[in-house]
Amino acid sequence: MIDIIAGSKGKGKTKILIDRVNEDIKVAHGTIVYLDKNNKQMYKLSNQIRLIVVPEFDIIDTDMFIGFISGILSQDHDLEKIYLDSFLTIAFIEDNEVLDEAIRKLEKISSRFDVDFVISASMDKHELPERLQAFVSAAL
View 1 (cartoon, rainbow, N blue to C red):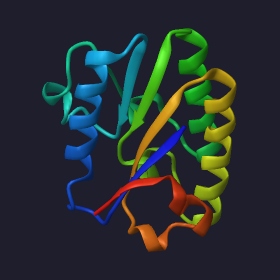
View 2 (view 1 turned 30 degrees about the horizontal axis):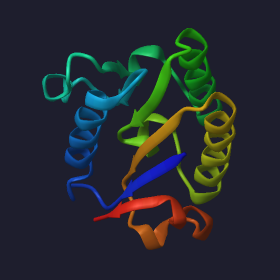
View 3 (view 1 turned 90 degrees about the vertical axis):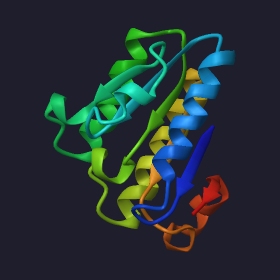
View 4 (view 1 turned 45 degrees about the vertical axis):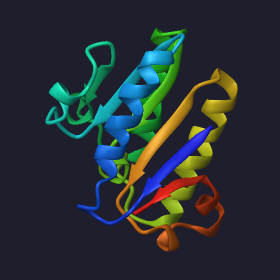
């Protein structure tokens, strides 16, 4: 499953993401990972959630980011959800074509490995490719 929280910068997407992940960990049967561009949210996350600061791994493009996600999955067979804060930044997405392709790859990974992705994207819902608008659960 792909779940997108959309809205321009400063609209409160990260707060929604933090609230959701902290609620999800209470009922999770597996593990949950939270990927972000920095560790600013570290103390707001439950200590049961693994925070990964993506820039520490020298990822340079979208394909490398998708490979990074696959690597995380290969190391944790109990992984239930991956939260992706600042998705457009950490995944090096610069246009809608790259965004659509990245989401298609995440859909395949989600289906194959039974892992859900919750994504915050700094763009308004109407700016997303039409196909992706169905994945939006919160538009700010």
